[in-house]
Length: 299
Ligand SMILES: *Cc1c(COP(=O)(O)O)cnc(C)c1O
Image 1 (spheres, rainbow, N blue to C red):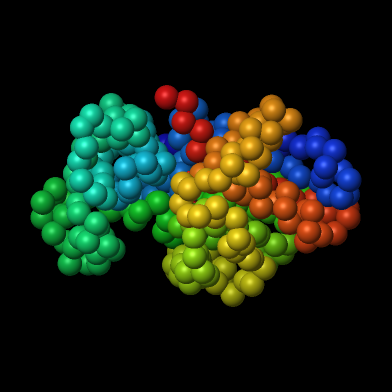
Image 2: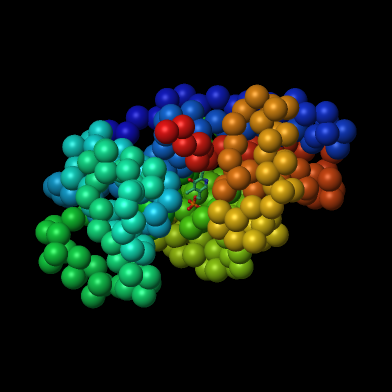
């Protein structure tokens, strides 16, 4: 339903990395779709198959007014023939911002919820109320992160050739890194760079996602793996917050590598990765696969 083309690995030919004897390969999931974050596409793949198998006609999900996940659900639903409903945190603003306009243009119905109610979005009573309001829907959690999302992201590992020690990703809700951990099956190490401030909660959330994944029929015991770490120090003040240091890094990276990144997710990951290289986190001769999750909004 959601096809994923063959995704290349791009070697960063950066003298600074070479000086430390470290190789960084970029898995270009930003090439999965011109407007949708690649990891969101991967997280939706098995969810849409499940929704279709269970006969649902409508997808309902949650997000902030700038959510990449909202965009992905609108686009994927449009493509796969589902009606889509987005429950947006906060008040309606007119005109719509570019994210919400794009989602609307792709057929999503938007409904707004005050911040207090939004906090209850995962509770059964709140969701029951939504079903009564909007009819039978397949409910996707915020960020799309659930067991099926983990299954979709685990496939990234299966696409990688041997010969690396680490795989790195930016983290929001933790679904993507949970998939990498599941796919690694206890070998090598997954590094997640938190885009949010104070993201220690990710240790519990990723663990919960791995548990959920383990309940799927074909899954194993991913919740027992300990070869992963969340790097908490590169949030630059919080979600979507930035500092001149980060902005300068992102600009320089784009120029040196002729590859686009953005400051919300991938910029923080690459900044953190380079900083860890300089601090000697990696040994000479080691190879890191950095997942380019996308987030480039060319609209
Ligand atoms: C949503 C998003 C992430 C975070 O993914 P999680 O699975 O929520 O941790 C990372 N990068 C980009 C570009 C995203 O859009």
